[in-house]
Image (cartoon, rainbow, N blue to C red; front, side, top):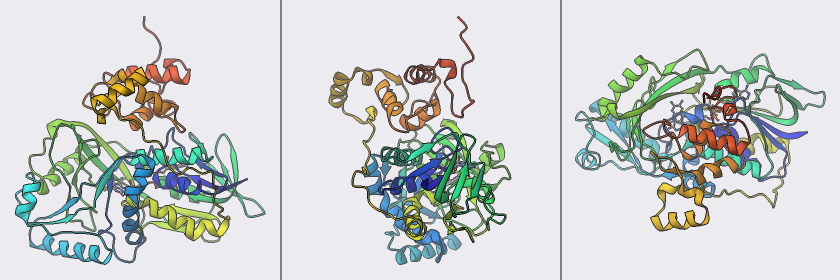
Length: 477
Ligand SMILES: Cc1cc2nc3c(=O)[nH]c(=O)nc-3n(C[C@H](O)[C@H](O)[C@H](O)COP(=O)(O)OP(=O)(O)OC[C@H]3O[C@@H](n4cnc5c(N)ncnc54)[C@H](O)[C@@H]3O)c2cc1C
């Protein structure tokens, strides 16, 4: 019998799993995908929003500022990257300038630091601010992270503390027993549990419908498409936002990422298909047109990739964190659209305090270790540090990805960890071979070789991402 089964291994599910792993509980996480953080947590703007944007009285307004304040310490303890680069909200004209004041007032009430620099000063910092920008509101504590790195790190900590993680395990049904427990079914196993947390992102409505005819919410995916610019393009130093609006949310922005690329996007379009993560000419055209309102000289000819992510949006326009009606112990963590990433540490705390602690007793496990060894990033080290590492382990001297300077040692480490990489994309997410200019053209065959060797499988069995996404079909000589 499990105490808690979490459905979904995105940032919401893994953050909760990490936090629960501090207690003497039997916890399982299931996900239908072949890796941690393979859905919305994999494709977003990667910003730790400070929390000035959500409307007063919402869960977002409560949990975003708190979550964002928790991030720097959290990332330090998990050995994850975070860059506190700050952000500018750029207004064009009088109407938008008035809205800056609304945002500043909200920030004031929520204890979020902000500054109104003169537009001249802002242009000194950001020479590529578009000519039409007339005023700027600065939020110095805005940060950027690698979202999937945080989710993977949380899963790693949880697994080290005994949480069971089952990938390739779609929830296909949920039953109730006479004694009030739940039985979560997957094709391979049945998990009986006291508490179920539905953290299934765009799949949350369907998961809830397995246990009730009326889930009480509808999820419609809202797509956001992006360009990724090469890391040698230096376009902006801060996150540059337009003034947000009810219809289009936070709008099209420019985001310097933790590894120096720049993201340009997203648009915001409803789609009926929860599996539709393709980009479209129309979506990308919208991104191009809209970014030019706030940032000029955007070199889209230096884009190395485009991608799209799906926001799990409900009519409530707020997070849904509640026990389902008439179903004690069945907790929905649904409609976690933006700022779900920034809020996730506070969402986890909220779920534990308001629901989980009411159903199972929380006794601290003195043996739980809540920190993670940070992965080595060779590209960050001085040459003395590199030489020392190579002397200790020559695998760190064999560079596999030339664009991102990733060594074999880093790849081996990410495969050998708890919740380690099992796929080419899993290696790419953890240590970046294939994230650079050539997008894996040179290193992918080497990564396939290493995975095959480490997992003791034939290279033809190595997959790109999903269970059936084989890359090779046989030898030709
Ligand atoms: C374009 C875009 C930009 C964004 N920008 C930001 C930002 O800058 N800052 C911010 O704070 N937030 C941002 N967000 C929101 C943020 O990405 C999400 O709030 C967050 O990633 C949601 O995490 P999650 O774990 O709830 O969902 P997910 O990451 O989607 O995880 C849900 C998991 O459930 C699994 N699942 C689904 N159905 C089943 C099933 N039947 N059985 C088993 N598993 C199942 C899925 O495989 C998935 O892994 C953005 C989102 C988008 C799309």
